[in-house]
Length: 62
Image (cartoon, rainbow, N blue to C red):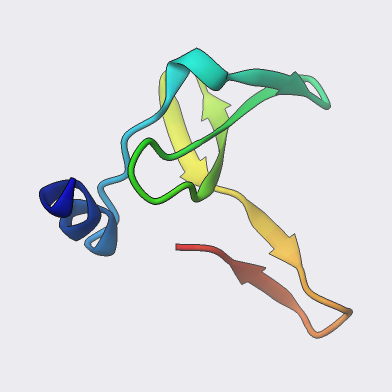
C-alpha cells in the first residue's frame, strides 16, 4: 500500500476496474491506492479528472 501511494505521488495511478462507471459518454473510476477520481480519455488511457472549484479555476486531485 505504501509503495502504491508513493507511485501516486509521482503520477503513476492504478485504475480500480472493479468500480468503473460510465458517465457522460466516457468511463470514470478512482485510483486503487489514493482514491483520486480519473476519467478515460482514450481507450486504455486514463487522466486525473479536472474539476472546477467554486469558480476559482480548474483544479485537479492528485
